Length: 112
Length: 113
Image 1: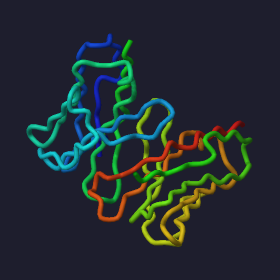
Image 2: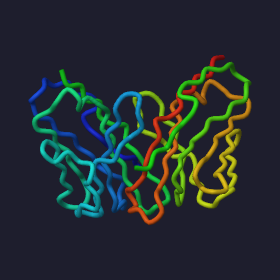
Image 3: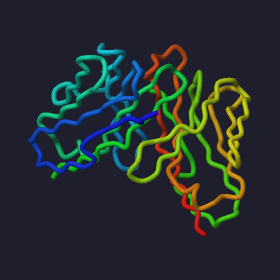
């Protein structure tokens, strides 16, 4: 089975610029998650989708972060405008049930 | 706020040694998962433990969930260089949504040949 695909792998932007990340989950996985992993820390949930609906976005900084999953498959996470503290690895994961998540390789964002 | 404390933060050992890493919390979790993350990759699920006192083995790795479901340990026997990576524990709060998975900061393990 193909894994969770993410792009790009790396992105360097200047502060106040915008950036978007893309995720294609495993086929048939209804639940999709975006996590932020800052260097030296564990992943932190930003948003969870069930099909194309948002289940949990309580930790998403909504003044600058947005995410969508229009057709219940692919998802896009956007940051506008970016801040220096947004430098992190952004991980997408998907799951079929509560058994466990499959993570993508992540997008490493550097804001300078 | 529920927190998972992992210790030690860093561990560097020689090939063939045994080691144990810990994941502790003051809160109860309905289940707990262990992941291994290699540089430049996402975390990969190793095991899920659900029942207090549960012990699961995965080749040379032994996972234990505390009786009170507040803590867990991972023991590796005869560590090999391929075991090198960041070991993360993640807990799901009772009654929490499927996405309410809280991660610890991880233990960074280095096994030298």
